[in-house]
Length: 126
Image 1: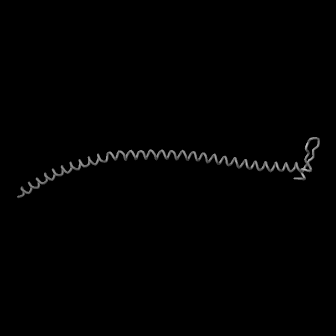
Image 2 (image 1 turned 180 degrees about the vertical axis):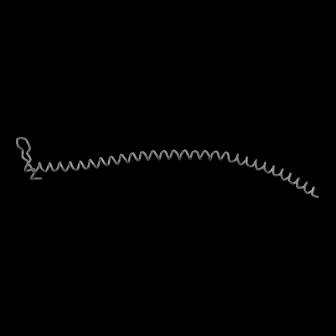
Image 3 (image 1 turned 120 degrees about the vertical axis):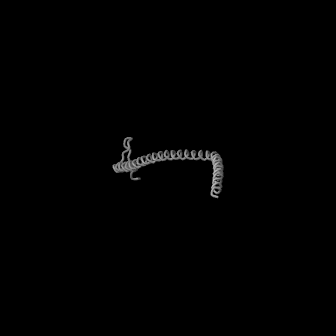
């Protein structure tokens, strides 16, 4: 760096640099430009990929919310059915008990009728 500082002269209020410094600055600018351009390309690629991920995440989030809503409705439906069953099962059991009692009564009449028929058949055969 000393050689550059020593070779810079001030002529009439203007700084004059040697050609080697100008060449170095041109090379430095080129290197910086190459780094900036490649970094810019990488950043643009990263931005595109992040945008794609954001879109996929939004779609997935929306799909999951729909699935959760469907599951919630199903659970509500099952809960309602269970609630109705809790109230209707005792009524159904009571109705079934009444039907069974009625059937037992009918069977008793049938047994009685069959018993009379059997008794009459036994008397007729004697």
